[in-house]
Length: 283
Image 1 (tube, helix red, strand yellow):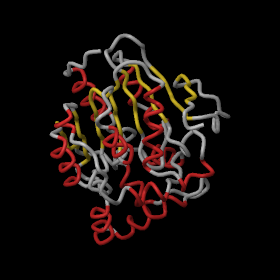
Image 2 (cartoon, one colour):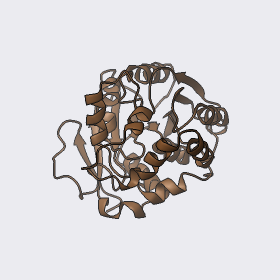
Image 3 (cartoon, rainbow, N blue to C red):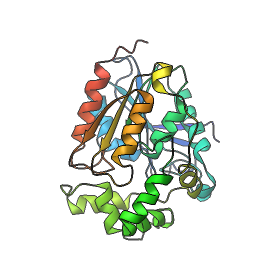
Image 4 (tube, rainbow, N blue to C red):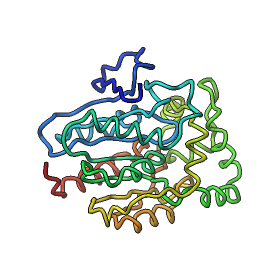
C-alpha cells in the first residue's frame, strides 16, 4: 500500500478516494517548465491546503504542480492508524510521490512538511526548495517551552489539536495563530473546519533534532519564508533554518502561520514564483 499513489486532477478527486493509496493532486502543464513542483503540507492538513491558492498560482505560470497527502491525511490511506505514523513514514510518502513524477523536482513545503523536506535533502532529483514557516531541524522543543510561558492558552490549544474531532469548534487562540486579523472570520472558520488531528508520534518526533544535510553544502538553492508574528514557528527559528542552509529568506508582515491560505497568500506565492523563475534549474 505504501508504494501506491492515486493521482487526481486538482478539481476531480472522487469523494470516496480515501483508503486507496496516497492522494496526489495534479495541476498545470507538463512540459512548459524544467521541473515539477511537489507540495508537502504541514500538521493537521492535507494536499487540499495547496489546492486553495498556491497550486493554481504556479500552474497558471506554466509550472506542473503536484501535492501529496501524507498517510492518515486528506484522502490518503491510514487515517485509522494516524497516531502510529512518524516522520520517517511521511518521508517515505514524499519519496513515493516523487517516484510517481517525471524529471527534476522542486519542493515547496510548510511547517511540519518543511521538516520532512529537509530530510529529503541529498536526493539528486531535487533542484530547489521553498520552505514556509519551517519546523527547524533543531526541533520545536525550545519554541514550545517559550510558548507555554508566553501564551499558555495557545500552548494548550495546540497541545489539544491531535485530539480534535470534526464536530469540535476550532479554538479561538489557534485561529489567531494560524491566520491574520485581515482574514474574514467566516473564511477562517471554514478553513479551520477542514483541519484534522495530527499524529502524536510525528509531533513528538518534531520536538527533537533531526540529522539533515545543509542545502548550501549540497548545492540546493533554498528560499525560506517566515511570518514575523508567527508564535508557532517563531522568527528566530526561521532565521536559524535559513542560516544553516545558506538560504535566501524573507520575513512577511501581516500574515499568519498558515500563510498559503491566509488573506495575504499572494505574498508567499509571488515571492516563491519570482524566486523560482530566477533560478537555472536545467532538466
